[in-house]
Length: 147
Image (cartoon, rainbow, N blue to C red; front, top):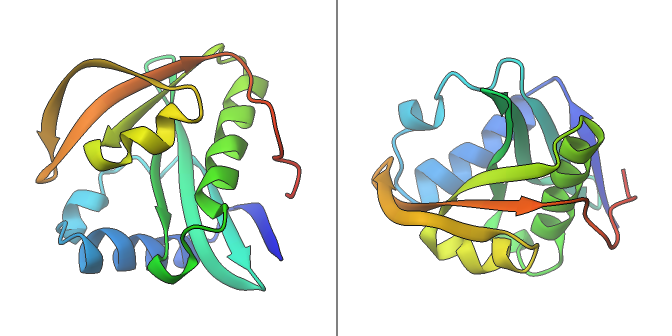
């Protein structure tokens, strides 16, 4: 069973981000710690009670930006990332954001496109990885009620 909850204790969030971004992708831990976690909304997904994925929603200059979405390698392919993204989109909508944004790693762009995001501008390098800015409009449909 997959569940997700909004969390203020970030120990599980940081453990997943360290595993995915630092250990798996080789991104320096200090680059992940970008100072944007304070004031952000964080979601932690669990599969059978075990931390499996995370993401955050942060308001930056009036824009709601989804970021730091990460799913443990052995938990991928079962809908955890989709659930997290939908929860973050829905929460942004509830907070009044009629448009949502993501700074996506280029390799993750197809995942976000399935959720209605479209690339805006040219790819760029951030934290040593190719990224692209993406945005979408509107609320999200489909399953996102398992919170």
